[in-house]
Image (cartoon, rainbow, N blue to C red; front, side, top):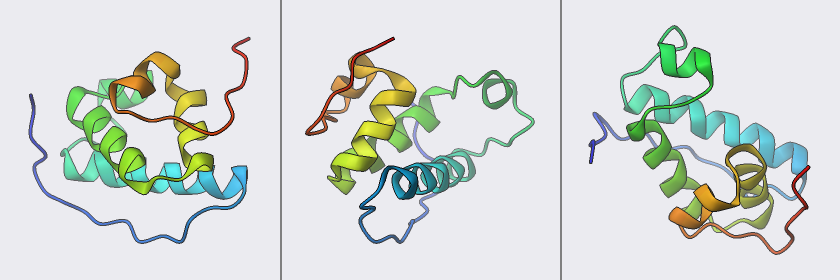
Length: 97
C-alpha cells in the first residue's frame, strides 16, 4: 500500500446539490493529487486513471464525509464496485448506462 506523502485538509460544508457535490469532489481530487505528489502532467492524471495513492486518498475522504450526494458523484465517476471497496454507498443508486 502506498502512503500519502503529506496530509491536506479540505474544509467544506455538506453539499446539498449534485453540482455542489461535483465541485467538492474536484477539490478533494486536487488535494489528493497534491498529497500524493502527482500533478496534472502525470500520465495517470492525463489518462484519467489515478494511481493507488490518489484513489486511496479520494476513497477515504469520500467515505469519511458521509454525504450521499458526494457518494453518488464518486459512484458515477468510479463505479459501484470501486465504491464498495471503500464502503461508499449513497441513498439512491442510478442505473448504469
